Length: 234
Image (cartoon, rainbow, N blue to C red; front, side, top):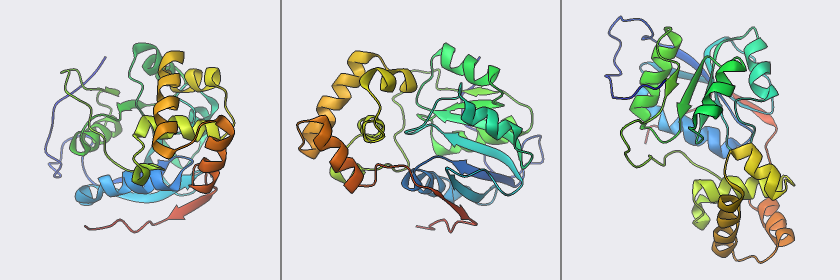
C-alpha cells in the first residue's frame, strides 16, 4: 500500500508527467507559501496556480494538494468538499500521519492519493505526477529513513518544530488536548509532550498565555486566496 524511491522530474512523456496544475490548500498562508517554495525547483513540471486558505479552489487544477497542518485529516468534510469541486480533478492529502488507518480513511473519504510529508520534494513531485496518471495512490517512506522536515510553519523563527507548531496552532484555535490528539492522530501523551516543549520554547506557562502568544504570532487560520502566486527563485 505504499510507494517509494526517486524518479527524474523532467517530462519524459510517460503517464502522469507533463505540466501539472496544482492548488495548495491549507488554512495557513505561511504553510502553503513554504510548500510552494519547496516546489520552486520543479516549475518545469509543476505550476502552482492557487494558494487556498479557507476558500474553495476557484481555478481548474489537476491536483488539490491538501496540507493537514492545523486542520483536519483526510477523513473529514474538507476532503469531501474538495472532491466535489468541479474545478479539481484529483485530491491528494499531504500529512505527517502515515498509519494504515489514516491512509485508508482518507482514500475511503474520496481522496485520490495520500502523501507523507516526510519525503523529499523530488519524491513529492513524482508522487503527484503518478497519482495524476493513475499510478500508486499512497506514498510513504518504507525504508526507515529519517523524515525530511521542509517547507515553513508558524513559529519556526522562534525555534518551534513543525509538530510543536501544529499543536500550538490547534491550541490557539481553542481545541482541547483530546481534540488535538484526535485531529492529529497523535497519542494523548505525545500531545502533552509537544505542549510542554512548545511552551518552553516560547516562554509561556499556561494555556491562556499560549493562546495569546499564538494570536500575536500568526497562529490563527488565514482567510484569503492567493491566485498565480509568485514562487521565490532563490
